[in-house]
Length: 344
Ligand SMILES: O=C(O)CCC(=O)C(=O)O
Ligand SMILES: [Fe+2]
Image 1 (cartoon, helix red, strand yellow):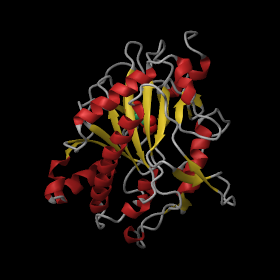
Image 2 (cartoon, helix red, strand yellow; image 1 turned 90 degrees about the vertical axis):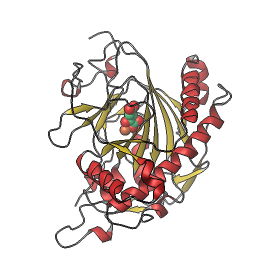
Image 3 (cartoon, rainbow, N blue to C red; image 1 turned 60 degrees about the vertical axis):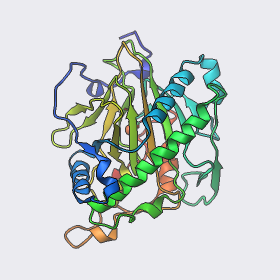
């Protein structure tokens, strides 16, 4: 030890094993048949992946490659800027968008820097996590001055990934035996964001994590990773950490908490984390797809019966979100809110 600031050091049981392991892969699903309307087989493959892993990769997804290259380029140009320049678009107490380098997951600091952008600008969210506080606040994006094409490129990219997210939502609804548009209304005023994660090389990758173990809080995540690798998923069957192999130009999709609740635990919001390395920097770009702030999340009535009663109490998405994000920015003494706390 001694090489890195102790704030980054994980408890021994959460430190990564850095030896390479060869393992089975999470499912890779080809979306090219989506537009033919022959979605039965596709929905069934997706349903199985959502049950067994909570994760899958998609190819032939429709997001233009040229746009992905452009967003990767502006991401690199931004994070290459001097720290003083990056801090000009820093997150603050009133606005959580923008640049940030002090995020904590499970109260240990992550070895990363991020830039967050809301997909809808402006986005409406509750002013506080307090149940009795009815005030709704308007949030807008903070944009950096450099590189000059950052804003336009990220906005264009978000619009394309959003189309993919709606497509996946339809397939997931079908896979649950529901109409394709069953979940779409929950996203009319979606509160999601696009994040750029930048993981610099780390001198002690055996002690720290790029992102500590966590489950994503929203509905669905659509993630672009580069060719470095580092994302690991906790396998449902035995709790082993399984690396997700980078597939050029594919997207990694994961079920997040609201979908676990809507499906009443049929689908899993799997725990995942990011391992860093001492050689190469890594970028990943998650698109977090979140419902509208006023949506009440609860197990879908159509899926419930006497043998399968609701496993969760209902909750308001906006309050849940504000509660969780508010606590990510600093070290707290306790774990922040998780869906486990809402199980019945
Ligand atoms: O960098 C990655 O591959 C995943 C990051 C992640 O899990 C997150 O930002 O929620
Ligand atoms: Fe995540």
